Image 1 (tube, one colour):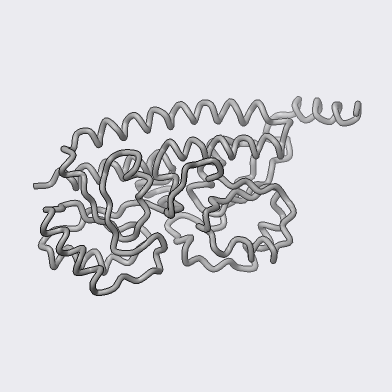
Image 2 (tube, rainbow, N blue to C red):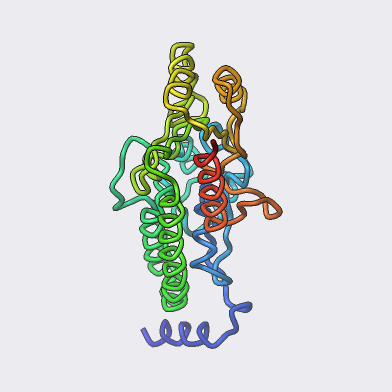
Length: 283
């Protein structure tokens, strides 16, 4: 016991750069940002599915298996979002700690819980507890960073509500490429319809597309968007046939690259909300 305490004291006395970093692998870029916000320079933060890449259709590689085999912590969304993950973990013989970020959220069939900032705050809390359990020596560091980040997320949630409030309720209607915004809809009072289901590789029928076109015309919907991961052809078709324009790409399942408009979760939500408000307010 004394030897263990001595090691902890020695590690605490070392500068952060000299301490061994906790090796964490997140399944996709949004979770990777949450880990980075909490873990800072105390974690080695890796991501399997990077920016501008679709988790739904991703095919893991042998390199992914080797990286996961070397990790101490695996952070995933859960809710069936990463359908390939169990196979990858088995191939990697992963024995580390698993953190399911969505645990404890009030869920629907839609696995994209992070589109509600309230759910994102639960994600961060789960990640924080998982990191502190895996690395008790840095527990105070993780919790302090998480508390600061949670305050920023609370402010983000307030900002989103104030921005959406600028749009009259009858105009809060949006068409998107795939069904990734139901938590946003539930939290912020915006109605979303989508060309595809919860998975980006699902294919709508001709009847589905015709129904969307009728809805756009009948309800005078002006806010049509594709996402950074989906093929724009379907939404372009709906927009063309309904006589409306498509807005800028939204970020639903992945962040942008560092030089893009959504390199972090906070930036992603602010970018999306700004685009949505402009689209819904069009005449």
